[in-house]
Length: 428
Ligand code: HGY
Ligand code: MN
Ligand code: MN
Image (tube, rainbow, N blue to C red; front, side):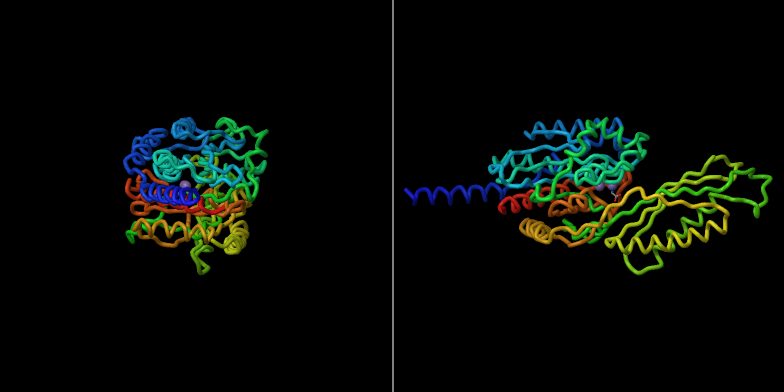
């Protein structure tokens, strides 16, 4: 009798292994769903403006929620508007393995940033269903809210979303507070959106590289070792509005001139130190904004990124020193208000190895690399071991209508994601 049971156990093990070895994502299903999602917020010149909290965002969320439900996931929306789809595992006592990304975009963005990770996560569930596999750990597919606005949903999930974040006006023109409520988030229940350290066995995110390293070197998979920290400030420059024709040049308090000098100061301060840090002034607005009025006020953004937060802060010190000089030179006042702060994150070494092993097993080339883009994964790293998988972006273009990843590359990433999930599932 024992012998029969043993042989039966061996048979089940090999049948399972065989079923898992045949798991390959379907490129055509990935592509058709990416294009269907791309209809929500479609721009005439291509790409999308599916800005968080917009009607297009709500329609896109309804579309992916429909896919999640038809894949058999039990779907809920947490207090921060994150969409969470659960697939029960055999052992409810084991920690959850979670994976996902975001579907909101930057204005005039592309069809792949975040979308590949969400559609890919759902593809993993479809493949498990088709293979009749039930994992030991329960699985959760997560669609984070407002990633592009500063990792809002994942910041809430780790309990760090503050009042000042909620009161900020997002690119949609709505406050984050109102936007999250419109997505179905219930701010009274924001505390229950918080996941505690130890609740998740792991969090994984499949994402496009958004740079050109993989594409230019024709490498299939990026194994992300670390994600840069991001510090973003809202800068207000107060000068004095005056007549553009009757005010001599030496009597002006020109806020726009100060802003121009500050923009150069950001660029020069970042480049003044060795390393891969980057700095950007991405948004600027002169008031009152008339050609014949010297701007009395300018609001602008300053963003710094690096794998080391100390590096970011030392660059910022240099920028502030230069800003003090600019104030004197132009007779203006420059104020910096911290808008977003996302810590850099190192991914889990064990998970990095599992991702690399999955790529190898599939005969895919891979490269260990950092992420210059920010991701929800860097928030989840605060409460769980994390891993990130990159697939190539054509010509390294992202945050643009020209963003593109091929169906084959996307499917490769999904298959590696699923194999990594199954490898993790064998652990307790
Ligand atoms: O800005 C970023 O790095 C990301 O795309 N949200
Ligand atoms: Mn993204
Ligand atoms: Mn992005």
